Each structure stands twice: as C-alpha cells, then as structure tokens.
Length: 406
Image (cartoon, rainbow, N blue to C red; front, side, top):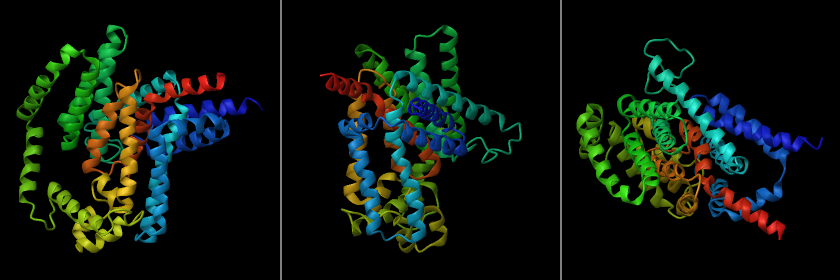
C-alpha cells in the first residue's frame, strides 16, 4: 500500500506526456489523460512540496488569484445561465496549468513531454499531406488547413513546433542523422504554416518564435546580424510567396474599408467586434460584467443575426474577453502571470530557450483569438503555458530542499 502514492505520481506524469501527445489531434485523448493526471496527482499527495511551489512562484500566485477572481465574478454576472455554465466549463481548465507544473518536475519528464508533442505533430503533418489523396473519416474536416482543429489553432501549433524543431537542430547534441531529422521536420512544419494554412497571425508567430530561438542560441556577435536577416527573410516571404502577400494585402484593404458598422469580411468583422467590445468594457471597466456575460451583452449590441453568428460567442481577442467579463482587475492578474513567467524564463539558465518563444506566440495570438477560451486553443496552450512556466521550477526545488536540510 505504501507504493500507491508513488505509482499514482508516476501514472500522473505519464498522463501529462499523453496530454502533450494529444495536443495536435485529439480532444478525446486529452480528456482521458486529464482524468488520469488529476486522480494520480491527488493520490500522490506530497502536499507540502506542492504548497511550497505555489507559495514561492510569483507567476503561479498571479494565476491562482486570477482563477479565484474569475469564479468570484459569477456573483454579479450579467450572462444567461447557459452562457455562464459554458464559461465555467471552459475556465476550469486553467487550473490544469499548476497541476502540470507540479508534475513535470525534472528535465527527464519535460523532455518526454516534448518528444510526445513531436510525435503528435508528426501525426498531424502526415494527415496534412495525405488527406488530399486518402479519405480519412476520423478527421474533423476533409481539408488540409483544419484537419483536427480549426485552422488558426492548427497554424499556431505548427508555428510553435517549427521553433521547437529549429531549437533541437541547433542545440541538441545529436548525430547527423538526428539533426537532419529535426531539420526535415522544421521544413515540413514551416511549409505547412507558410504555404498550406496561411493564417496571418501564424506568419507573425512563426517568424517571432524562430527569431527568438535564434536570438537565444546565437552569440552576441552573431545577434547583430539576426535583425538584418529577419528583415531580409520577411521581405523574401512577402514578395516571394503569393499566399502570404495576398493575405496581408487583403487584411489591409478590409481594414481600410471598415466604417464602424456591421462588416462581414474577416478583418472587418474583427474590427467591429473590437469596437463593440470597447463599448461593453466601458460600462464596467474595473470589475467587468461577470463570467459568461460577453455573449449576452454582444447580442444586444450587435442586433444582427448574421453578425452574431460570427462575433457573439467571443470577441476574437482574449484580452477583450477578459476585460469585458473580468474587468481591469482580472486582466491585470492574468497579465501578471504571463509577465512573471517571462521574467522567470529569462532569468533561468536552462529549459528556457523555448519558454519565451511559446509565451510570445501566446501573447501575439491572444490579440486576435481567444486562446484560452476556444476549444482548439485551450487544448494547445494549457499544457504549453505550463511547460513555459516551468523554467524556474528546478531552482524552486533546490531552495526548498536547502531550507528543509537546514
């Protein structure tokens, strides 16, 4: 019986590995892994160490305070019962972040998680290239741009994976065959981002993620050439890839055509949603309108069924959603979590090369997508944010052990 907590902890850690494996392609595997992880985490115990982790890590303190605030807003929410219940069912997943952080507490487990993520991404890439020739009824759509999840979450996942493969190619002490393997995966993932998915935000996130990896890997003398290289690469992509150029030009034209009224273009819809969101926020800027309130208030503001089909569910921006529902108070707590995670990753001497790129991709993506609300994004970013927040974890463990020893 004494081995049950230890075995439960091991099972929970393997469930985290399964989580990372499921990110690119399966909600069902994600759900099963979450259940195993949670029960294993509870049975494992070690509460003193877990409490010490939460107390010592400023990022986690901000995150836990944010979750408390999110659920507290249910006391004054303007949302309907249906919308509030849906929001409660979405936001609890944020609590998986501290659980994952407390479980992947060694380099070995973190490495296993990244390898599982790699395997899951390989499965996605195989489907992307095979779906045009083979019928695959188990996929969400018979299209390469949205195989298992929607196009935006697939593209951002591939952008992060590109940065991961580039880091492995440049830093890992491997044989030439293994380095060539990661270089090939980088090429396939980048091709999917730039030529297949062609989501505007994924272009920016791909460039930002890969540039940051190069920044951390290169020496000081080489970094000065990185800026020039990034500018040249951006120009080449814009001029040399018609899809990239057309998507950016279309966005500019749609933005110019927007007249602060209902618009049904991709960029126009977002701009009008942002405009309406600012009106909603202005009614209760400090504490917000409460969890699940945005859809109900947006329906009143838009008063247009066609527009509501696109924009009443969420405002296509995580920051505007949080400001609308949780106010400035809740948004500041969440930004505090992200900011402290970046500071922790920047100050860590190991396990941090990909942490900051992941956090920056999340920050950029959250401007035009609800990255912790929409299903495809939640499954992707909850485990990855936990991994990015893990950069300071080894230091915290050593400090705890020193205090207990003394």
